[in-house]
Length: 401
Image (cartoon, rainbow, N blue to C red; front, side, top):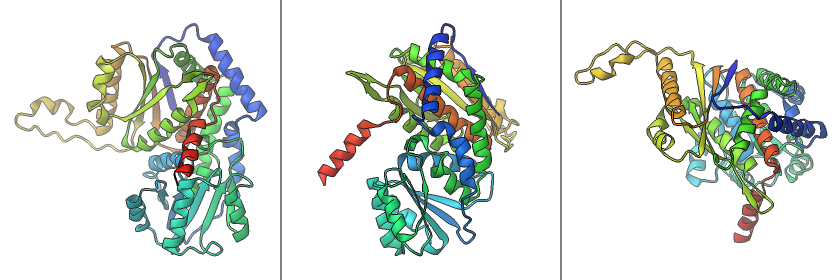
């Protein structure tokens, strides 16, 4: 279960909420974006996924939307079950690649190449490096491609009889984690992808049945107060959420940073880990410009009850007030204290409290942020699903070579 609490004024937002809802309902009905239906359609995909009992590791070759969402879920759930290790080959950093290649044994590894277009330069370059380093045989070694129907990568797969799963053409990379992009590798690795999808299904149903209007209210508030408030800070209180933070930054940055005519629109995403970043960013929130909203994301129950020992050290007695309490209590009380201090300054704050880390909750959290992003894009009247700025950089890269 996930609890959502808004600590800002949501009065007078009804018209904006209706506008956002109508836009998303229209997108879904017309198939403008297909991610709304992934929690349902990907259930059929589960029946087609093969098992690989001889495989110990999975190497995902992909970048951005082809890896960030899967990595976020993997890092959150990997502490809960016995699973195959997933290694993410996502950055053309030669030192990083060398280190990760050294962790891979070809005969124990399934290589999954993910590129929506089939021509992502970083992905294909790393794939070429893997072919050479591991002497991969495209027709006989363990390979899977995940790509758009008819892409150049699928054509290569067809020529070499490589198993291929398709990404729906109307689902963008950063919204694709609940498609084959995330479901295939996570299922093969041993994760509970059925409950991941069920968790997302529930929130999609609730949203379109108007039982999750808190999403619309939050989007309407952000829109109403833009550009006075133009940044959203996500303060996630668990180190396990670090890669979720990175996925959120891509989702918001690439979806909501757009030109609308001559006007530049953008809600800047900033992601931090509590309590670590309280010691670096909190001062700016407390006494800096009031141009930010803050979302606190915390885990109610970590299922780990390590206690702070009842040890009193000379000169350090002022720290003894937490003795005998669990670290679970400490990190959540720090979240509460920080949230109260930020609210006291007039900063708009909301709280997302995850009951516990499990597949259903992670599916819900993923679809929550996707729905929120789409609602904001609809209110700003921008194309939430394209990325012309990214495409410009790709064209310049081609010219530089």
